[in-house]
Length: 179
Image (cartoon, rainbow, N blue to C red; front, side, top):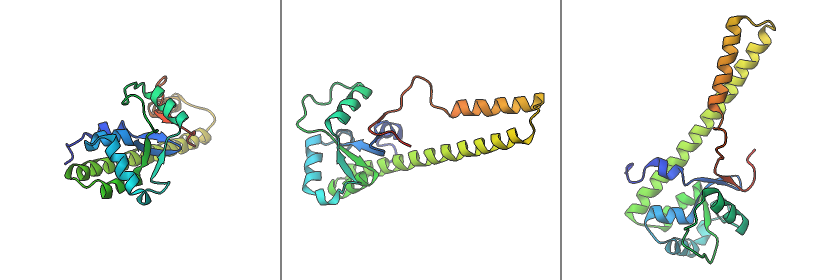
């Protein structure tokens, strides 16, 4: 079941839009092995299962920005409507709408990817705050730094550089700025 779709493939299809980690209807349809039109039909038939915190539709500007950021020109030609964005909860709800063996397995893999990303983000935040606290404690300990102290400060700087996103690489983020 884990090998159906590699987790890295799923993680690359999770975007930050309007402050939510989401997957787009066209990407989900591809993962489920159904045409996007069929996935959207099932969602519309069961729209009461998808409140605003489960699903929203991209507006024209968001869709345009997303296409330019990902540099994909072949999203099926002209579209009648902008794609839907499913939050983690919306993806989980899809399992009750799409009832095939593949849909169940894909849903499990997607939920695992969302959970893994959340764990990575929490670990990163915890580590950053612990390093900042250690650095502050170390700096306030004594104003005169020995050679040894300078090496410790260099280690703090190196760790901060390793934790920072690579320069020149933009994160796949559209919509509002995350705080």
